[in-house]
Amino acid sequence: MTTAKLTPDQGSSTPSTGLVQSLGLFSSTAIVAGSMIGSGIFLVDADMARITDSPALLLAAWLITAVMTMIGALSYGELAAMMPKAGGQYVYLRESLGPLWGFLYGWTLFLVIQTGTIAAVCVAFGKFLGVFFPTISTTHWLWHIAHVPAMRVGPMVLGNMEIGVNTANLTGIVIVFLLAIVNVFGVRLGALIQNIFTSAKALSLAALVVLAFTFGPNDAAWNANFGPGWSQFWQNAGWSILHPVQVGIGGPTVLVNMLVILAVVQVGSLFSSDAWNNVTFTAGEVRNPRRNLPLSLILGAGFVLTIYILVTLGYLLVLPMHGDPHGATALARGLQHATEDRVATAVLEQIFHTGGAQLMAAAILISTFGCANGMSLAGARVYYAMSRDGLFFKSVGKLHPRYKTPAAGLLVQACWTALLCVSGSYSQLLDYIIFAVLVFYILTIAGLFVLRFKQPDAQRPYKAIGYPILPALYIVMATWICIVLLRYKPQYTWPGLVLVLLGIPVYLFWSRRSAHPKASAVLTR
Image 1 (cartoon, rainbow, N blue to C red):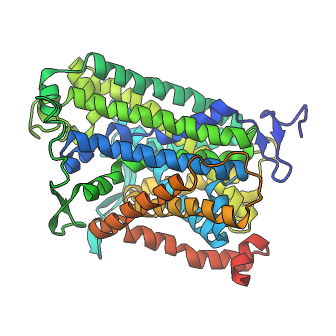
Image 2 (tube, rainbow, N blue to C red):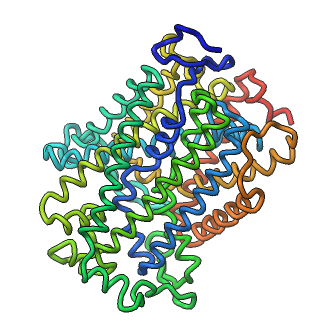
Image 3 (cartoon, rainbow, N blue to C red):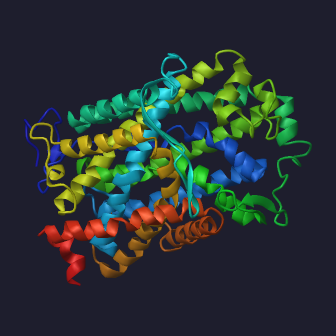
């Protein structure tokens, strides 16, 4: 239904929800790309280089991430076209596996995945703003509440956090609420900001690639990473070569083969590429969603992953894999020992010698702001869908009477995110939830098989390319990574599972007090 005077966000509205369908293909693609590109691509390659200790394996890790993410996007495309509703992945899990699984995903998303990521990128915004305004710093305290010392609980090391307000996390909190308020004023305004910042950071990454490929290559990096005769490129990449991995925190170091090391290193690359599914949360506001949602997933994820691989290759052209951690220059320190893991900054310092840190800080400011905006815009739609199912605060299921946006959901999300910023716990929580994120991806793609069986005649405007082989391949690859993380990185696995399982009593509480049929369905089976 189209009206002449809807709201400032003109467009068709979804009769069942009142959400305004005003996101076109470009805006949807910008949400995919903008949510994926945060600060990770500028940092994680240093740690990945240390773990793989091989240029070939470093690139192989990114290629594995690209294959898995693209299979995920192709598979989610079918679900998105089949169920173009606000809430996205929450809805897919609810419809395929049942309301409990949908709730556990939404619970984990609110508790950590979405809010923790927004907190991390907004505080990162504050840290890098400090490059231009030195008074903005994590050490410049305005109100220091407490220091929580480190303590070991099973495989976890908890604590070692500073609680309070410093100028860096205060800046992050201001950005959190600014973006929440902006997105209350209509999805079009939020999408416009997303379009501008996604375009800007795409250009920034493209410029980084061009600079690395044209002005960056040098004999030292080429000889160390590719020559002579590409022998250095393949160093430590053989099937028979074993790699050291420390089990857990403070555990023994064991030797593992190439398949295991590539699974371990996915902690960095997979989750620098995460949040590609966020556009499905906004499905109720996408024009022609049965066409635009699958396309935006494929185009956005494909673009970002291509850029990521080119950026990593550019790093290898400019910096040698190995170096001296105490070296005086970026070239001497190399990729593995870039100062504070800021690889992109090291690359620009090597190219320009002066001003590189400022250029990179500006690029990261653009990147983190756009990432936080996309995730803020999208996340509130999940809590909105949960509320309409009777599984979240009732007020969150209401739209702003004028702008037709989930205003309460945006503000609740912002308040919890701000609390995570002050507590200093978001980085630990994100570490702990990595495993759970992968599990939910596996369950959602498994749901594709379930729905093909349960609803063979349902309308499917787009069918997953390569079904059933590619979705099954994703499940096998992701399951292997989960098994490896359970074995060798328990600090990333069991805590995440505990956070997810804590959602079960919360689900029982919400579903018992709700008369909504979808909320109570699991209790009546």
